[in-house]
Length: 284
Image (cartoon, rainbow, N blue to C red; front, side):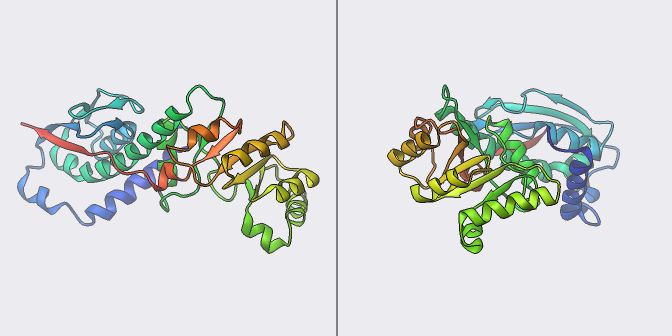
C-alpha cells in the first residue's frame, strides 16, 4: 500500500459506502436479523492477476471491526477461474453493505493489475521500466496506480505537482523548447522546488534542440518509429534518460524495449484495462 495514507483510504471507503447506502441498505435491514453473522467467499471467475485483497480486508474491518478475514491469495498473484481469494465471516448486514464497494473496486484493480502484468512480461529480461500515466479515472488514481504496482509496473508522476513534463502544448504555447525549458528552470529556482523535468520531442530537430538547451532529466520520444527511436536513443546516449511513448501496445512494447530506451510510458495500463470477473458468495 506504498504511497497511500490510511486517511486517504478511509475517506474513500466512507464516501464509497455513502454513495451506495445513503440512509440504509433497506433490503438487508428488512429481511436479515441485525445479529445474524455469515461466512462468504470471494470467488474468481476469470484468469488474471488479483488486486485489492488488502483493500477488501480494510473495508470489512471498517463495517464490522469484529469480522474474521481469512486471506487465501495475496495481491499480485496469478489467479484462474474457480480460485477463492479470501473468506470473510462478519455481521450479515455489514457484509452485504460492503459487497458492491469491494467487488467494483477489486474488479477494476484486478483488471489493471492483469494488464500491467502482461506488459511487464513482454519486456521481461530487459532493463526497460514500464511506466503508467495520468490517464486514470478521476478520484480513483491512487487505487489505479496501486494496481499498476501490484501488477509489476511502475508509477510515473502522481499528478501535475510532483514532476515537470513539458509536452507539445506547453512548447507551442511557450514559443519553443528552449523558451519552455529556460522558464521551467527559472520557475523551479525561484520557488525553491526540486522536480524532475521531462521534455517531449516529436522529431530529431526538436531532440537536438533539447540536447542544446540541456537542464532536463528525461527526453520523451513521442510516436517515433522503431528505427528512428533506436537512432534517437543513440544520439542521446547517457546525457539524459530516454522515454518512449505513443503507439505502445502488447504487440509493440517488446520491440520498443529492444531500442535501448530507459522507460516506456503506457496509458493503456489504466485507460484500456478491463475488469476481472469476481463474485462474493455467502456460504450456506
